Length: 289
Image (cartoon, rainbow, N blue to C red):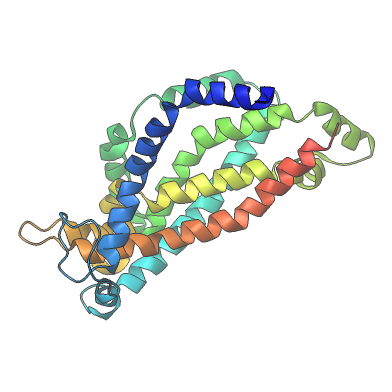
């Protein structure tokens, strides 16, 4: 018996208990996904007690697109417009703020950073009343950006860009050597040219991560959307799908699961699109000295 085989056998005897734990964790993690897929492709009227249906059908998907009282396509469009616009602007605001905190020294810089950090300690629920009252008064003067408008919801979403995203991008900008900026300045590049042509290309991997996380968070938001979007035609997917399971006497879990699966499509597409930039950034960084 070879020495390598003895070592492998001894190692398997030591770690065998990890495999059942890993299998149990995998089953526990995939059960919600299995339930959603089973409920979505099961027959109409599937209850929560049924995990895997005996027959598969598309009745729940047809119910989403055929029911006149359920403008699912409109909800889908609203979600894509609101979440995409807010996510792009969040990344832009966080990028400018993080670059300023990382590269420039100005009065009040340290206090501003500490203030952003302190604000992250308080839960978002504490600010709901203040946000609603503020935007309600704004709607009295400018109805287009107040409560009941998608633009007002986007403006509120932009406030979240100055917290976690700014700190995440600032840490990345701090890791980029300042000698690059100085070399560009010697070559005659302005601060704007250095930022656009040198810093931003290097920051593409982190910008892709922030964009993906921002889009997912906005797509799943329910609390703020419920405060601002008041008519059914203005609902996002989170608000619209919630109506399927909030009934006191009727809960349509099948259409809800079907809508949840369709909601995951933009996230999957965005992840596949941004994954290329993340991999390219990691590969480029691994071969540079």
